[in-house]
Length: 274
Image 1 (cartoon, rainbow, N blue to C red):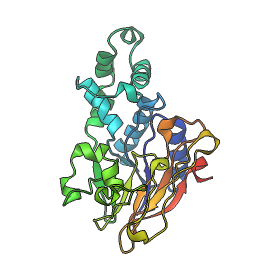
Image 2 (image 1 turned 135 degrees about the vertical axis):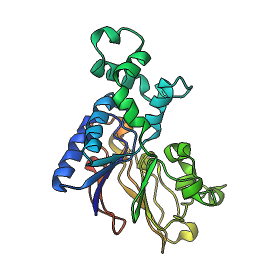
Image 3 (image 1 turned 120 degrees about the vertical axis):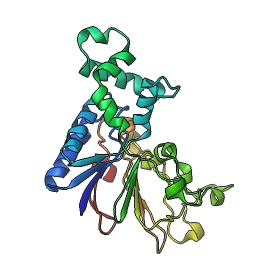
Image 4 (image 1 turned 180 degrees about the vertical axis):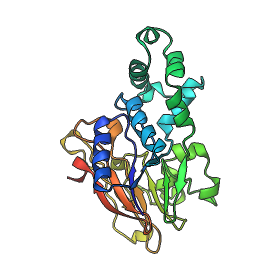
């Protein structure tokens, strides 16, 4: 089965335009969204509305990311860093888009709860991972320091983990360049969450060439799809194309996978691929 996979749209409407172009290229193909629909660009509500329509039509699956969870936590009065991660602009635009004029002048949190309840419920019902025969799709990753990462990684870490998924933390101690972790499961893992410009390091025992740090050319750090794979293991794909940085020429990475083989067969990476 062919599958379109997209992560970290962050309110960027042009990314949704590019997704629809890929869906037209691969009609009747399931699209899986890996979370972080909001923040960065302010139009997260509009992005969520489009994705919700696709999910309701059984054309897509949507996974929850950490930014989406921060919105839920804010609305539940839980202390969290949403506003310093782009949440303030998102909230203002959402209320502008979905609430009547009178409500926009009142308590924004209450206006969101009142007039955005379908979208809030949509986020709350999202899973934190989905599995297929050869693919595990998840927003941030698994805590690979655990004995059984697939079973023991908490929902929180599925949305937030970073270094303990990308790197072998024990081997990385006291090294200039970190050591990539192994994939302990017999599935290809596809994640977003970490802009790929931030991912670099060495393979254990130098079994493969290193991934060098990304150069910041032309004022924008390129965020192409990156693959980490040890010999005899399933690959790990990192596809966060950097939308949260709001570089206007960038629209992230839209990927197509062959689910039966666990490999990427096509992509639209825009300027990230140049």
